Length: 184
Ligand code: HEM
Ligand code: HEM
Image (spheres, rainbow, N blue to C red):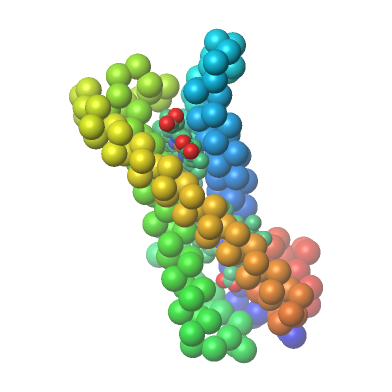
C-alpha cells in the first residue's frame, strides 16, 4: 500500500520516541525501585532511594515533553488514519491515543503529588502541598494503578503496530518512523 501522503511531522516523531523510551525506562525503574525500597538489605534500600531520585527527574522530563507533544498536536492536527480502517477501528485507535495523552500527564502528576505530600521523599522541587500522609497514600495508589494502565496500553499499541505491519501490511508503523526508513 502506498505511503500516507500526510504522515506525522519530524518533531512529532522525535517526541513520540523520546517519550516512549523515557516511559519504558521509568516503568522498569519504578517497579525495581519500589521492590528495592522494601528490601531487607540496607544497601539495596539505599540503591532503591538513588533510583527513585532518578525516576522522579525522568518523570518530570516526561511531563514536560508530554505537554510539548500536546501543544504540537493541537497546532498541527493529526494525520488521517489508514484508509482501510473501519469507523470502529478508528474510534478505538483515537481512544487509545487519547488514553496515552491522559496517562502521560496524570501518571507523573500523581507521582509528583505523592512525593510532595510525604516529607523527605521529594528529590525534585516539591509542590506546595504541605505534609499530608492521606493525600500521599491516595496519590501513591493512583500512581501505581496508572502505571499498570500504561503497561496495558503499551502492550495494546505494540500489538496494534504488529497487526498493521504483518496482517494489514499497511504503512501505519511507517507513519511513526523517521522518513528515511519509511517504505514507499
Ligand atoms: C509508552 C510508550 C508509548 C507511548 C506513550 C506512545 C504514545 C503514542 C501516542 C499518544 C500516539 C498517537 C499520536 C499522537 O497523538 O501523538 C502514538 C502513535 C503511534 N505509536 Fe506510540 N507510544 C508508545 C510506544 C510505542 C511503541 C513501542 C510503538 C511500536 C511498536 C509505537 C508505535 C506507534 C505508531 C505506529 C503510532 C502511529 C499510529 C497512527 O498511525 O496514527 N508506540 N503513540
Ligand atoms: C512517566 C512517568 C512515570 C512512570 C512511567 C512511573 C512509573 C512508576 C512505577 C511503575 C512505579 C512502581 C509502582 C509500584 O508497584 O509501586 C513507580 C513508583 C514510584 N514513582 Fe513513578 N513513574 C513516573 C513518574 C514519577 C514522578 C514524576 C514521580 C515523582 C515526582 C514518581 C515517583 C514515584 C515514587 C516515589 C514511587 C515509589 C512508590 C512506592 O515505593 O510506593 N514517579 N513509578
